[in-house]
Image 1 (cartoon, one colour):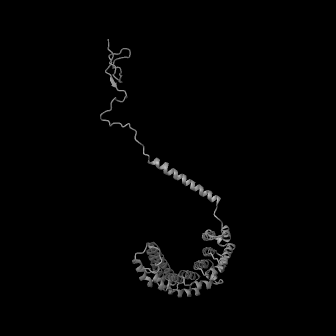
Image 2: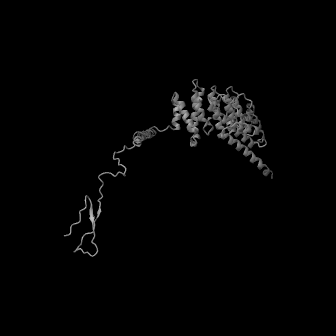
Image 3: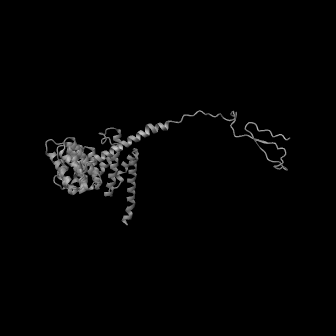
Amino acid sequence: MIAAPPRARGGEASIGRPGPGTSRGNQGPSPPTIPIRSPELPDKPSSLAPPVDETPRPQPRRVRFLVRFVLVPGGVILAAVLALAIIRWWAFPPPTACQLAETIERSGGNTRWRAAMQLAAMLADPPQAALRRDRRLAGQLAAVLRRELTSGGQDATLCVFLCRALGEFQVDASLPVLANAAASRNDPVRRSAVESLAILADRLGGDDVWSSSGVRDAILQASRTSAPALRAAAAFTLGVVGNLEAQQRLESMLADEDVIVRYNAATALARTGNGRAVGVLLEMLAPDQAAALAGAADEAARIRQRETIHANALEAVGQLLNANPAIGIGGFEDALARLRQSRPPTTILARIERLVDEDRLHQAEKPLLAL
């Protein structure tokens, strides 16, 4: 009797195959079995395997905190602000020019000058070309300014912004009332009117503005006033007008006691190629601008104003050399070298180099022009 093969222990199973010379009907003794262990985990972990940490680790909560307490509330607030802005724009659209003019005419207190300020900014906006040609609106504002100038309770702030608004038009309807404002007794109003006349002279033509009733006398009187800021504004306006009488007055203003008045007169004369501006232009190119910077509020303001003076001086020298090539850059070389050695801002250094390069190019073209 053939004994049965031993049964596999535990989870073992045996796999066998018939040996050679045997058949399924008459099987001989079974060959040794090959135990196959079932894929069961061992009862105890192997000493070589690392221990398995089954304790759940806490998840990072920083991202969830940011989303929950920062991004979500911030998005809600931003959406609310945008919604309120849209509702406000839809329910309260910005006023039109006609509405602002009505406010200036009929309201009182600070509302009037605020509307005039807003209208002046609207007129200065480049896309508002059609509004700047509105003669009816210009006449409406001119009438308000005229009443303010002739009334005993003149609102100076309102008059200042009305002058600014009238200076932005491209029509001559405002010239007479601006001439009256330039001759008034209030210096801020006079200055605003003179500056507006400069803008109109640039847009309508210097001769047309100069020949308008009262404009010539008002500007010349402003150039002789005791207020330096008003004289400086008058010098700028005379430079925009640019006719012979204006240039003669500017030549005399080169000796003004106020440095800013002298600088404005020199830059105005340089645009026409007047060589008498050279002396003051050299003064403007000096690194030390103590006299011009005396009224600056702080060091940052002094730096900005010094850079502006030097930039305007270099621009004026270039205009002078272009309008009058006979002067040449030789008289400015020492001043330019001192300014370059003073370590000015890079923008000023770039302007100096550009001025020198332009003069060098102009000198190189002279023989070609002679041929």
